[in-house]
Length: 361
Image 1 (cartoon, rainbow, N blue to C red):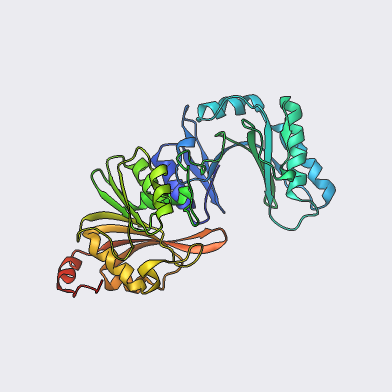
Image 2: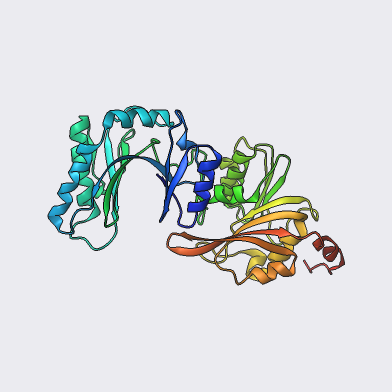
């Protein structure tokens, strides 16, 4: 089962099928269930999923009283630990189960907490494995090498799962530096996939932050040429460190006044600061229409822009610049609704761009 950002379930399912990892059996809230009989299918290669698990055991959901949480220890007793160790190794994870940590979630009101569920299952697993158990009650990070288990209660079933990788997939190795408002890597990977980046394409992020979009684009298409700009010098330094080893050109510039020629960009990926987690800076605080105009100026006719926007109210400004939306996808990030927008610069925008009076700079 793959966990993901709410709204990316179809995207994750498509990646599972494209990679030949198996047959998708069910899409749920932030979940994609799939089955594979293919030996060695490396589920840890998924880029758009937050995490991926093996199904360990299921039973009927327990009651809502506090004492009912203890009954979930039977999930640990029912798990075939030998098969789980083998499958975990086959799918790209470590082989040994050297420690236990458990995270739990449930739907509906309960007389117990998630910590009660975690402790009931975690202690039972640790006894069976002869290893230590790390409780999440303290808030401290588990020791290195502990295997990650997950318990979910949906009102009908209680499910126990084992994380395949040593740590969640969304924790990328390249993420050495971060800045406020940095983009969630699986969401960035979904945007790069949506853009359809090909060999030799020039890719731009005009508000690059810590470079997450550019790195995910470069991982998907190593032969792309990557350009990123940001007004914040700390963001540019963070992007340079995260993108080390990739063909990335980075610089400090205003997203509405980019040091680029007209029509030289094939793909734009952007999570602009609309004043949510990060306040807009530079000319973005003056006029959003200028941002859309700059995208239309640097994008090649027929080129694609994939943008993460807090709403759809600004799309008419993009249409006025020849950016025609061809795909709209609602996602929920940290409880807030946003939209993934894929737009294509229409071919006749080139003539309109040449006729248009240049905006004052």
